[in-house]
Amino acid sequence: MNIEPGFLYFAYLAYIRDSYLWAKMNQPLRTLTHSTLTWKDDLPVNFPGVRLPGGNVQSCTGEFGAICIQEFSTPEYRIRYQVAEFEERFLFQSNGYNTGVDSLILLNGNLQQEFNVYKRVHLFENQWWLVKAPFETITTDPDINKIIQTFTIWFSQQFIDELLPIFPFVHQYIQLEEADTQLPNTPAWADHETLEYVQSILKCSYMDEWRKDYFDSRVRDLLFKFFVRISSVDPFETSYNKSELEKVQQAASIIKEDISKHLLVPELAKKVWMNEYRFKKVFRMVYRAGPYEYLRNERLKKAITLLEQGLFVKEAAAETGWRPADLIFAYREKFGTTPGKKKQ
Image (tube, rainbow, N blue to C red; front, side, top):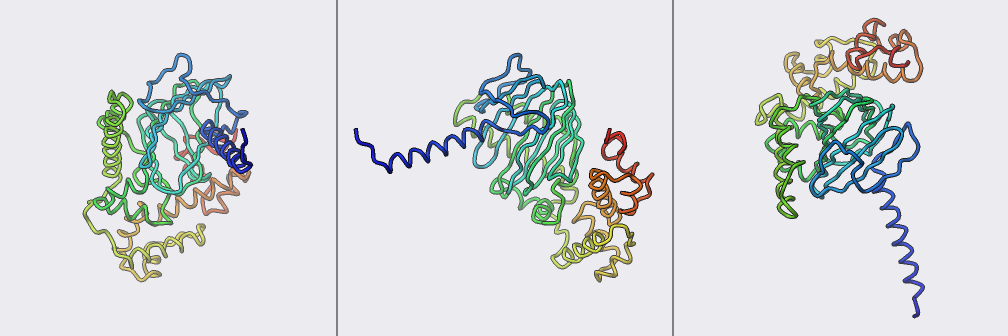
């Protein structure tokens, strides 16, 4: 049988493509503390979780412990149910997204997460967060010798666009390029209804197309609850105009120019030609914090970077406008420990 050279070439390209996709599919996360993991497409022995209906399974076991990831993906959203138990410290990293909004509900255990290296959050059992794209990576540092269960849903931009008209605050925040990756009012505690939605997905008894329709409904319900929770203002209220937005963004830039300075609200309002009362109100609506709290967050973010680069507390405090004792207090407030103990 004669085989055309062109056919062999395209067959080779298809093989390379399929090999790449297989390798990518079988590496759902990257470990930063262990060698490359070997994944299997079945549940591990004595799996403590449930089987996600219709989801793909990938699991890995070793001296570190065991981890199992199940996914159900559609163009509109991606559900990921992850169960793990680590016998030693296991730091891992997963990819972020270029568009849409990602969510996580911690069903069991405690963990710390870092977005794009600089943003950190300590998550406790039954808490959840929302983050907006773009962000490159999420680094996770889970507790040891505890079963960790996480339930995440990535919502596509097209999917969330259906709800944004009735949540103008969320809409404005997502569009704001300078806004923090982590959405306001999160982490938050999951109420009974939210956890019931999650369990209804994990224990869905419908098959095939009915299952897809059911998941569509439950995922939309969860997104609606998330948006209601983070909207601390009346969702139908027009909060500020374009001119006011530009002025408070200018004020935020002035604050970040020299974070060692503490400009008072009257000074900032005067610099951007705004009424002081209106300035405070709009600034808080845009950044979910007052000007001083915004300054404090920027100082802490910079100080954390300097501490990670090896500077002592006194040096990092001097660079960022803190008193050393206040920096230690703020650090403990955020991470639950002091810089010295964290370094150890």
